[in-house]
Image (cartoon, rainbow, N blue to C red; front, side, top):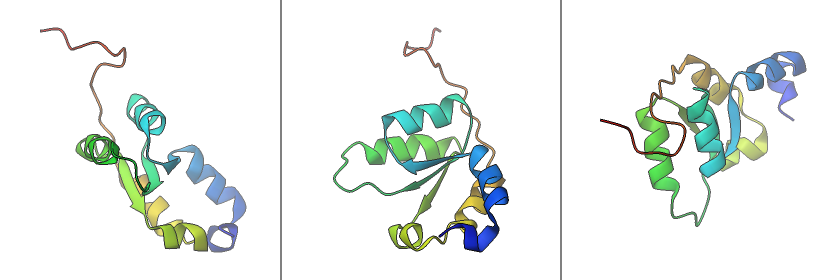
Length: 100
């Protein structure tokens, strides 16, 4: 499906350098902790999405893909955009409040 657009090996190399999936606590925290862009499809009925999305957006760490493009295998433009991002999360990773 996706391999027709870009070639199998090239696509695998691109996906190794970024995350892909639905936006959630796990994908957001992993993406921020490792400063890896997240290419995601919007998640219906997930109330926390706007907050997680804002956090990713503030740290230059996200590209949203439409569901239509996801299911049709048109991933290439989104992956290219993600490769240009420079994630820069510097916050705490241990769940504690920052110390003054």
